[in-house]
Length: 293
Image: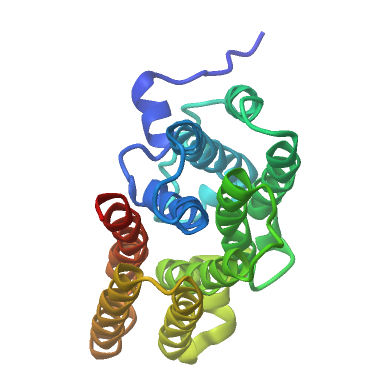
């Protein structure tokens, strides 16, 4: 019987991208947007615990299913050829078992919420599970990533209010995240364009071509526009201030990208999550100021 490696602790550490925490933050901030915006900055402790744990589980599960889906491609891409599944350190079957196990733990978490949130969670799992396969069919898998990550906004809002259609705010934040994900993930994909072209994988970075830098900047500013519209509806001093700081940071990152060109794309990706952090902190500060007043 052929031995199928299950991987060491360090292999799973790398598979789950624990050594690269930016992905956790890029999912955490939209989730907190939803919770904070829906609750006036002070969500229930129960929801905070459930949703933070859910972010960790779902981002980890997303990394596993992504590498499972891309195992035949990753071996031919310089940046990804050492990933545990592509390098043969973890068998695809073992990775799939790990993915299912994380979904089951996430299910236990969502069972602690309402039926309404459980229904929303099913949509979230579908979005997250299909994303890794879309790069075979569309040049805009990053838009699907934005919907998968942005669905955390919708779930957070739904958990706090019980109705995701009672306000335009969650949907403005959702579309903000779609634009934001398209922006930072296109920047991330710039370095892989030659390999992606060779193996037949699609991305927004390939579709944009020489217009990639301009496209990344415009998408980042569209994110800020949607966040601003949400801030206007929420009408809080600190969320407005957080939005203003996010705008300033987005302009700084965009200016640096335009000056340095595509070589600065990965740094743009790494630093983009601070834009989301500033907006989340503005929402939180509004809630704290209300509690203290």
